Image (tube, rainbow, N blue to C red; front, side):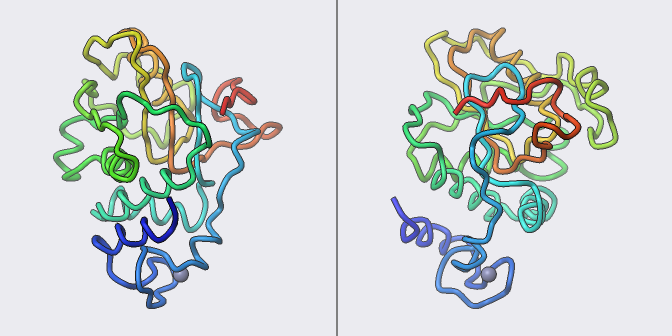
Length: 231
Ligand SMILES: [Zn+2]
């Protein structure tokens, strides 16, 4: 699998200009230069939320990734969200076992109705399209409309997310891959992992497009989970 295939796919959705520098391009949302210059992460030394057997993020949450995610989230750019999912597929860790179900972190129905879509689901859709994996957006819901998290401390976020999710019963042999746009404090992911485990999930992995956590040694936004990354 190479750039040619993803370029062909993205060409179906996106205008032929680089989304970052505006340069005319034949295919892909980004020119090859901008794609290469993205802040790709090495998969070691990053804090990871508890409750997952594997955690992986492709990119650092900094310019221009923050801009692409904002477009995917608030700008109505479904094509950008799907393209980010395809980037995950291209850069995924080697020897990744095929998950049985790919589960986007759900939005509360009210927020999804306001936005018109769930960006995590669209990212997961791009990933699944590329890899022929099974998207299973319906197995869990966000049952409380949690307030915006951005202004809360990590402890307040955990309180805020208590019992936020509900999931259908799951067979314990299932390998579930959870998808989100950006890993910030990890509180949302930890709450969802707790719910999926309680529902019976077996192996749980978490992939996000971007990682906003500080590296070990700086102030931790993710509890004491530094160094827990298992890839
Ligand atoms: Zn460019």
